[in-house]
Image (cartoon, rainbow, N blue to C red; front, side, top):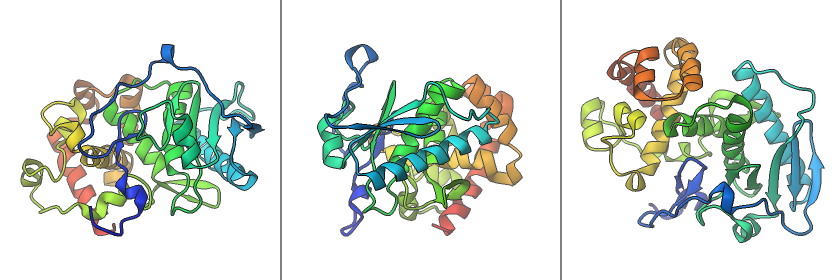
Length: 293
């Protein structure tokens, strides 16, 4: 990594719960539901919006900003998947909002590298307005929360993390999460400028500049996950963005069906066609995105 990089770019995301790992460290086992309980820091106050209940240790301004971001996600998620939007969710989705990163780390029940995580029944996050994008970790994890609690999509790493990165890295403007408008200050998009593609798809896969789609979807045959997790996450995001918006959005309906059925390679090819055919369009889509990074 180069010197002078934003400190958040030095923390690398890993795992289905939006967890972080520094290169060379060994992965820890994830906590199980049986071994964890919801721990709320002393002094947290309950604040509610239409669809969220937040136990907050943050100040009022940060709490309201985090709630507004969560509500923007709720609206965007429900509209995108044509889900009914209740005037008030009952029960409300739970969020524990910490005062700052230090307090989050103090009460962290996930891996020690986490910057946010969803562990039922709550999304755990902090809101840091000193960074370029203070909400992207929370929106990523709150997307996992909606996928578990609302749409109940079957879990497959590439599609689950694809949705988390897709929503989490969308631009938030005037209270609207603008899907399909990527924010390069969010993970993993801040790594796009480090990706150098040759224009030769097979060469770039062989040289591990990108993860080929067969390996990405099947989770077999690619480089070790712990050694290439930024490449995997860029793959999750870019494949999801391509299937929703690439080639005039012609894959979007089939991809929504795929999410509901599970993201196995067989289902992928049944609904979308041979993965090598999809790969060519995805590669061109990714190259076009890199030119704007």
